[in-house]
Image: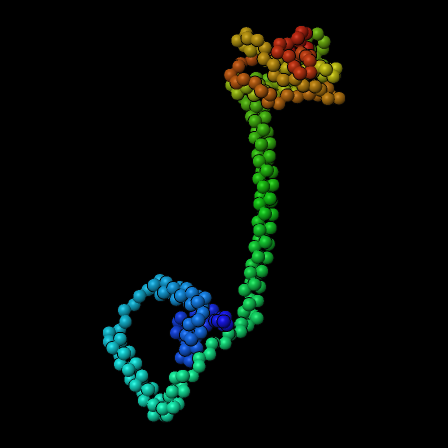
Length: 278
């Protein structure tokens, strides 16, 4: 048994829309009789067309249009039948009705119709790749700029705090000097008790062993135990500084002192106090 010849999808769509000449409509109708697969495809196309028709806005037909259409169809059918009967013999009429119906030849598709969608898809894929790369590059650049802005903001905030401590009118300024020798090693301290903010600069300090360090102490005005304000080591010129160490706020200071402690610091000052000031 021969397999039914396939019917192109374009012909099925035109057949479903009744957009083919009568001869081609008859040919496709005959080809559909023994082609279940084409019948299923035609049913799917007709369903899609029905949905498309339902989705469109329905407009009422003009009054009397249906009656005029039926009358014109009757007139056209009678004229066609009369003309055919007048110009054909009975034998020709039988031969015309019994003429074999051949299946519709498949319509060839242009190679451009096949190649163009793939070319468009390839161009879109390339464009999407380029856009994705550009977006990733811009995101990386924005992340770098954000990190730079965050670092600059942190540095600006720290510098602003230092300036506020140094320029505060109610800051306590004390110069520390040696108690047993001429005031050659010195230290200058600026302290804001209500914020617990302190900035100290020392100069002409003598070097200390590798396991030792200088440590600054805040002597509370309340008579409490001295508070360690941090350790530091001078550079080769004897200069050292402490900037905003961790200190509790709201502790007024009676005096300040500097001692030599272990490099890790100490919980209580070790005598002697090398530099002190009130």
